[in-house]
Image 1 (cartoon, each protein chain N blue to C red):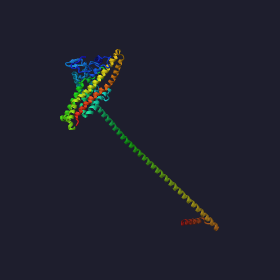
Image 2 (cartoon, rainbow over the protein chains, first blue to last red):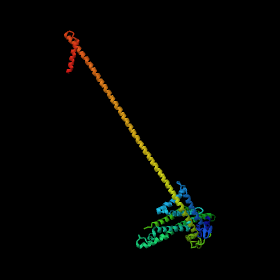
Image 3 (cartoon, one colour):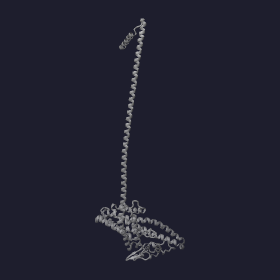
Image 4 (cartoon, rainbow over the protein chains, first blue to last red):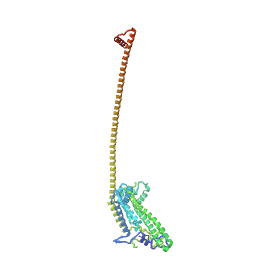
Length: 274
Length: 194
């Protein structure tokens, strides 16, 4: 990772610049050198990390829940608390008793996003797989499909769709306008905002961390050429460490928000506003 | 770095790249990041599907089972506590009953003792009264006997004095037996006339 970063910003002119940035910002996110390819499927570093995240989620859940002891270990307590949090505060808390049915989906979302986000601050990984649009987009589309299907199945076409785009409680003069806003908001914007929110947060965090920490390393390592200006590197590095702590919070928060909003959307489909 | 086809984006200069002082023409806007990469999408779908299947078929049932087991354990603990409480209450009721029996027994014993003491006291008083009455009656009898004896002695003395006086008056000895009989008769008359 460090080599890749140094490579990405290798053209940095440490004598004239105050921060090192790559020529192409995509280089911070695309590790497109395939380790191997099967047909059109390229097994890149990101793909490897996606499967690694999957294995970590499976491992954490398996080792956290397998023994079901009356007095659990610390690790089991942490896993059970997280699972209990998603179950009680998100699934049952937001959706209600019917939330138990959606718990497997919400749990999968939460843990997969959480581990994917935490890769950003994991040493030697330093790359959030959720900063690649594939994952947020896929999960947002699944959430969209779930809440739309649930809405139609539970309330029928008229109650779910017609009542949303032609709301009786709104004065008739404004009804069409509110209807259009609702239509776009529910069926178009929800999945987009859901995906972009997670994606953009992780991209921003990754950008800040890599630019600050890489600049810090490059400026300090070039102290022989630039003399006192290497102090900028120290400043960037310390600032980067501050952002590092901040990103821990962001990683957890974004996993929570994505899961919570998915639950909220499902809940509004189960009981559409009157 | 080698790039996959379709992943090169040269849509203009970004502020970031400009800030870095790179040539704007060779930079990228980063908008390409918004387009999902096919291999990553497939990997994400497979990974998420496996996680979902695992959570759905194993994790959630395991968690529910653990929860049920804990609730069961909690319930049995509560039941055991309830049973212990009931047993304690029964013991307490038994002890309370025993205590009440002991109190009644004590009260009965005290009452018996009190009655026995009362009997002894009454008997003692009655015996004392009897003895006192006996003493008084004996004293009366003795006093009466004494009084009788004194009266007899006085009577004898009066008779003798009367005979002596009469002999001095008549100047000769009188028949003492006869005189004594007369005097006694007289005295008896006096007593009966009183």
